[in-house]
Image 1 (cartoon, helix red, strand yellow):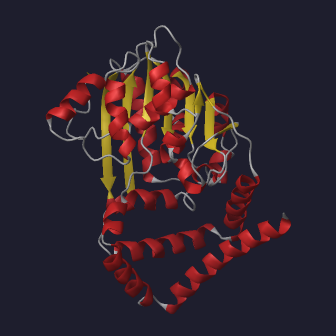
Image 2: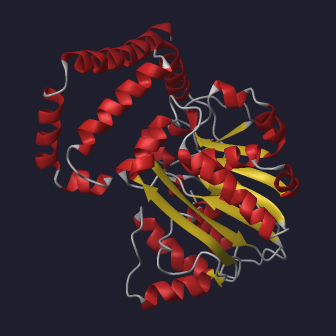
Image 3: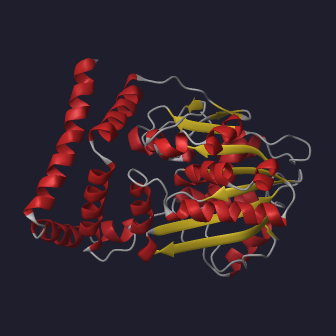
Length: 355
């Protein structure tokens, strides 16, 4: 089996000679997760090679979300295909008060196109909270920022645009492309959603969303969970992952053959996940979801941890804080949380029974 590292060993040929493909998309969607903070100014243009050199000169690889990012960075920097691609307009905003985590980077490619890469959820508690907010809110702050960001890039650069992202970044790529202005839409040639969640009914039925559908490529692993949240209307490609369950969200586990993903069939477990999530959302109103999620994150925030790593590194202390916070909740709130979780378990049991 092969992944994007094997692809880079095989396909290190200039984009001027060999056309952009779906694996290139996956690699560039990951680039927005890289630690460019303090490496470049927002409107500066530097190559991936130059960014990596600056990172090394600082004596650190920066804060990366996955260990594989540390290995991929030098591979891209030294490659013929990506090393001289120019990076610009890097932004990374974390605003707890607005419950917003938004990051993006623009990559100018040698074939005179641009790839706008939106970061998915990082390991901040705020980032995860914003993701959960999508289950009840028709619009979250990072979606607003994603539209403005794309319009700004299109206005500055008149190149054809590819727009993509992984996880929440995939959702932002589709949303920004759908709700960008008309001039921006004329520049968009492809949109990539790599295992990102879908949208509310209002977005799915909107004219703007339906107008962009023909340009959207959505990829999910065979037992995807994140990519099956909320509604999708676009054509979806199921890809082979070497991981199981929620860990299939890890794009480094996605298998490639040549310049394409290894296709997989939708499995019974995949159907079960899809039906369980869909039916749970039908059973629990948006208002109930909001109340549950706010209460759940109030419990997490009581630990004062800012990231998932901080939460897990002091697990016993944080667990005690969370239990105490839960016990201090009103009886009404505790009953609501119990009822919501019971509904999820009931939907799951019902899906098993129907098999």
